Image (cartoon, rainbow, N blue to C red; front, side, top):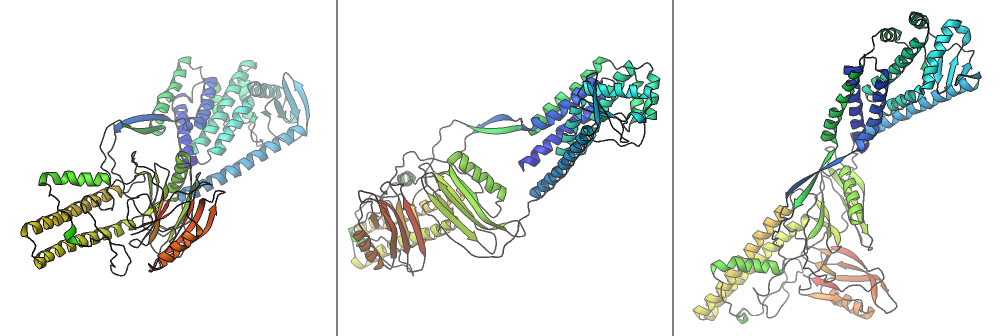
Length: 630
């Protein structure tokens, strides 16, 4: 695509130079100035499209809402479907263009070899700084660099003298270089009709120069014009040469009889300068957006953890919910809940903000979203950006598109210089669901999907239902135990307050997620006060996935450290089996001190959901791993 854009810009510059030449200076006699103008135009067309300028635009920095992501999707999700072939018209056009260039360039080389063979196969003689080559073939006189080729038997002595003077001017002024340059320009711009007109103008002007110089040196200008007319013969004319018998004889005679143009007309060529300036401003100026330095407060996204300040826990027990084995924290005895003073209405929002700020999760520095409308060109840009700016190797394969050009299948992989790697593969009957790859400021990288948002919303609903059930139990307990009305009302008020707080948290989360998931390729934010708490591998029955978490404050964690022995791993395996969770491990590698430096963990719950995680630390002891049973 970049090559096509370059060719378009180059063709536009050729067109501008030709129009200025045709409209303002074509018919004057300033031949040398026109020669320089045409050569300058060709050189400009080659190099000016690469010249670019940056225009800096300062805008107010937007306030970026942090994107809360606490879960990952399974690393593999493959569904077979019929393949669809995507057609990229720009690639077809580029292929046609390159084939045309190849054919014309081969033709150019053939003509060059043919010309060299004619010169080498004939007798030559150096006369007045030029090499005269006399040939027996019936060809028109021509010059090529310092060689003047002609058949002396085809011309009279007087006519031959004028022809040789004409060709000597071509050799002395190195007109062959102009001819070769014009032909190469035509090859590279073969799809541009202005390029062929431009080539003809260069060749035409060279003949005007030679005619003008020759007419000033011969005894009779009229005799020279008659020689031009008599020379109009069907003899063979080799390509890539300056030959005496050009087809535009009438125009050459008209230019010979024109009065000399005033040198002030050279200034007409300067019209090209403002046109080039407009061209550069329109096509070669890149707008660079820079944000003004502002101080803004970013309200971090709240985690799913429940604040212990709002709901103190005395003891825990596991309660089955539907057909899953979700671990639910529940007070053993509601009467043991301590009495809490209900904040005033004006303080509730402050308390909510305080709870949210205490549960801040790390946010993503880079967030690249891949949707059904993502093209291969977009993926190439993502690949280049991740490699150049973040040293991440991002690759994609197995691209499939339907008839509407929508992405239906893709496989992506990533790896970095720390040894971290991952893959994601999806193939659907219809367009794929959106997913994304993210990078955090601490170097973490992974995949995510919008399906997580649905599961999180379902979990929020269940949390709200549990809170509601707790309120109902307190109400029932108040009637059954005949507690004092004042004490019971306080507990009910606290429960209602917690329910309202949970509802507000749910609304804030929904608003933040809606803003964060708007169609964008990048969402950038930072969290400078987040410590590296070590990787935590979570086997969540809610999400049925295995993912890495960095929150040490979750309950129900089972810890694996670099010092964990093989026997302890076996005990862990047997203990999880009693909870209907299949836990296995392999590829355990240890260093000389006996510390674990890599391990592969596989977990499978009773629903059949299976996940695998590889933990590596480049020869160093692994960070603590926590199996969090939610």
